[in-house]
Length: 342
Image (tube, rainbow, N blue to C red):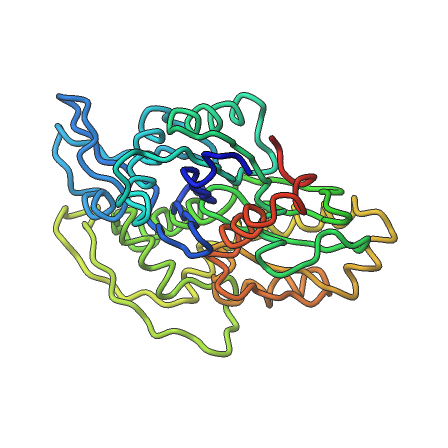
C-alpha cells in the first residue's frame, strides 16, 4: 500500500451501448442511459444520461442527441469522454472531495474489440486522472457476475445480450476458450420494431416508443405462458401524416424480432460446434447462462433451450450482471489479475 492510496478511489465501469453503470464501494452508484445532448452552435454538452434521454427525438436543429457508443465500442471519442467524466463527477463520494482523487478503474469491453478500440477506451479513462486502468471482457465479467467460478477446470457457457452486441463465450480456467461477438442485440430489436410498425401498420414511431414497446410487450416466441396485455401505440400515420394510435400484441413483436433472434441462435449453435468435447460435456450438465438487458425478452430462454436442447438460466438482475462481475474483479484484483487486460 502506497502512502497516497487513501487518495485513490476504485471504480468499476460497464460502458454499455444503451446504459452506463458504475460501481463504487461495492454499490451501483450510476445507472444511466449512455446518451449525450450537445449544442451544435457552441459545441457544449448540455445534458447527459437520463436528462439527455428525455430530449431524444424532441430536439430542434441547434441541439443534437448523441449516443457515443455503438456496438459496445466508442464511436464518438469527445462525447464519450465528456459523458464518463460527468458520470464519475456524480459519484457521491467523489463529489464530496475538494481535490479530484486519482482513480483505479476496471472497464469492461466486448470480446470482439480491436486494438484501436481498446486504445480509445484507455485514452478516455486516462484523461480522467486514472492511475491504473484494467480492462475485462464482457462475457468474463458476466460470468463472474452470474456467480460462476471461472477459475475451475470446468466449461461454462455465457451469453451476454447487451444494447449493441451479443457476446457468446465458453469459459474455463479463467480464460475464454471460444467466443463470438455478433452485432445483434437490443438496439437492433428496437430497429426491427420500428420497421415492422412502418411496414405493417403504416405507423412511424420513434426510437423511444419502440424501446417502450420492446419492454412492455417484447417477446421472442408466440407461445408465452404469461402473455402481456396488448399495448396502444401512438405515432404518425405515413399515409395521411396525422397522429394515429394502433393496438399491438406481443405476437406481432415476436414476428418482428424473429429474424434477429434467428441470427443469435445461429451464432450460439456455431460456438457450440467449436467447443472442445470435454467442455461440451460440462456444458451439457451446467447449461447456458443468460445476462444483459436483452436476456429479459420474454420467452428468449425457452426458445434458446428448445434450439440447443440445454437448460438455459437467466441471471438474477441480468441488467447489472456485467457491472457486478466487473465490481467483483476490482475488489479482488489479485485473484482476477490473469483475467484483466492491463
